[in-house]
Figure 1: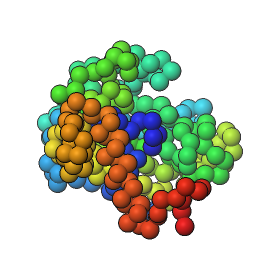
Figure 2 (figure 1 turned 90 degrees about the horizontal axis):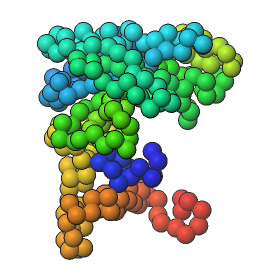
Figure 3 (figure 1 turned 90 degrees about the vertical axis):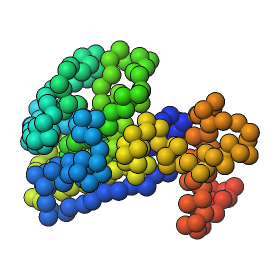
Figure 4 (figure 1 turned 60 degrees about the vertical axis):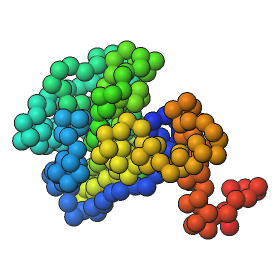
Length: 265
């Protein structure tokens, strides 16, 4: 999490993560339907507002496009009577100039967006020896947010304008980088799923701003003591509320403020 991003409608320095792990017990064919069931049937999210991203593949490393996950998602949407065309999206370097077309719901992105490894992005930057793999992310669309062209000419699920909010990420850890040119399949591929609680709550509330729904009491208190309204200076309120929540949880966990080093003891 980049601290510079705090202040928009969705980024926080402290968030509560929901998730599940599989260390060889189950993999993609179980995880994808479970996620769809959780989001749509359990939480009651409107599947018409869900969009999915998958890994476009890296042929230079003999890593295929993740058609398996994409086709699983497509089938689940179609079972709900929702058209879910699968499409490649343009690259980040090209400014995602292609945009979205009617009926498209599942998009392939390059490694910068849909590849996981420890601290890096993309197969080319994966440290040798590390486990890694493609991921499939879930986004919720808020129709009350208009696309801001400062983030690109066209909107798409991975756009930063705030119309789409990532609410979950399934990492399919299926490879280990053997050397700079070679990735070998893991004998037992793993699942690493994470969903930010605050973002899930925002999606359930159909609120494009996580702060009123996940930091409501803090926002109200700040309004009271400042004499100002959240609507008049959202960025400042968001930053203060986020830092207050993070500080309280740190102190409750025994981490006390200090002027030296990181203040940990």
